[in-house]
Length: 238
Image (cartoon, rainbow, N blue to C red; front, top):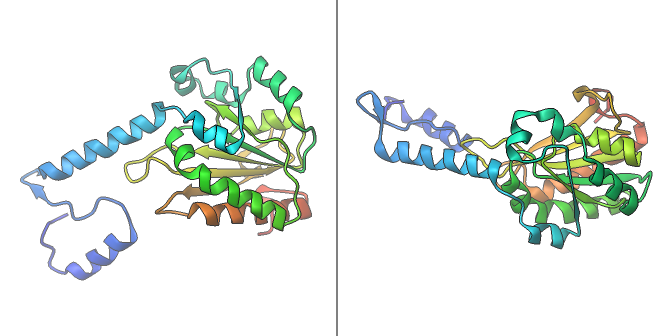
């Protein structure tokens, strides 16, 4: 867009409502040097979010042990998404040994496509979620962390633990506006064969999106509705 619009007021309003790149200006047919450098920096942060690892300190403070999926490394995780939907044999055994079976609420955390999202948002989201569970009269099972997980891993976990409801806090695919955004996927009685329409999600959990503390509180209220109505996804009355 031009650096000197005829009517700047509507443009100023748009800029207040979105982090999208508007009114960047140009030098001939090319972007301004500063804007190009900012673009490259944001792109680098997005790539770094995908390839980084969640800090062990984050998991220790949250009291989470770690299991892994069938994806052997990050490259395999990115090239073969199905492997991120299934736990490896060691992870399955550890879950059976460590976790409470058939919990009312099962909390799972995964790096997904942004480890930075877990480091940045989990310290606020998880305590707020646990407070919300208590306020809604819900009991929690044994929470844990899944390394290199996809959303569908919640169905594999449901097969093993048979929770009434499960919430997966997972790093979102980073963009140029936000590289540390978290999502919360929720499902009533997850199991293999569940479809996307069987799940509910709160996305864009970060400082400039849905505030982490607010998201944690809202997740608890949605889980309460799932338990009361015994359903989730498009059939859930919110």
